[in-house]
Image (tube, rainbow, N blue to C red; front, side, top):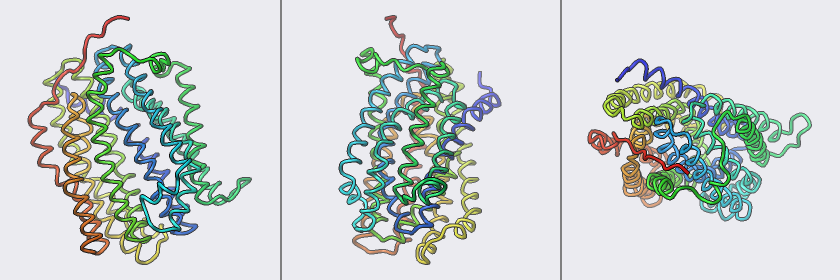
Length: 452
């Protein structure tokens, strides 16, 4: 039975802690930018480029977690706790493995990595210091993010938020202490921002382990993680995860190319683009939280065979995402004067930032809609392939080539290039809506698991 009030009540029960968690995570980037901006614009620009490595890693870990949630949400709705734990073990195996690869790479080849993002020697040297210092954090992020994902599915979203938020608060405090040398801490500049991240992730890992030990969230079955799980479940996991991974890498690679393009347009363009992106991410926290909550709710409904109710709820969520996106755009416009007063940039960068914030205000409307549908509604029923095709084609066949052409061949002004880079969300809306109306996502993908 479709009860709209009850569904929205449950949505906000899930969304509120998730959105708050996204917001707190965005505050770390904001605090890095704000505090490093007091030192020099070069440190701000270098850190914003170096953080792209963590973003690329998040694409891998995000795909593993999204794949886990596609299965876990339906099995949790079905009441099959054993399979949920087995799905977590599969997810953790790959999340930790890729995290270790990124940790080793950032520690061993930081300058080579920075060369990908910029040709400015000053930014390369500063960014390399950041990457070498922050490198241990990647494997820790792999562990904690896998658990945050499963907590949200298993009705522990508040616990996940408490842990993540406490880690963010610690990170921000340590940022101030280690960047500027407050109290008994040494003044480390950009390296201090990186070390603060590592220490906060150590704290977060300890908190997650404590929650597991107290049986407040599903246990990690080490044996299953090391030796493997049932072949059928493993096959299902990769069936839904591979398209998500390709989607993540295609979309994230395109977004990273945006930073590469802007990074080669100079220090002013890089600084303004990074600040606008941080503000947009903070305001978009609610949009992303809604997408996550929609996926969990619809996944549970589909796992219980409530197909008609899920179809009706999906339509309501689409309309709601447009409303939230428009409201978020208004908020961005409202905070723009404050951002321009608070952030200290060179005059050229300040001018770029003003108009990039305007672009962010309409970009977020398309982002809210597409996040809800592509990242929430479609995967809830196992439809992970369409998002892969849509994002990869939109970015790599349209927006990235146009942006590169505008920047490096036509030599268009910075703001013209930035405008082109905001087109991706709107280019794909017609295809997303057409696919949504086919209702291929309305299905139960669970299996009866054999006793072992």
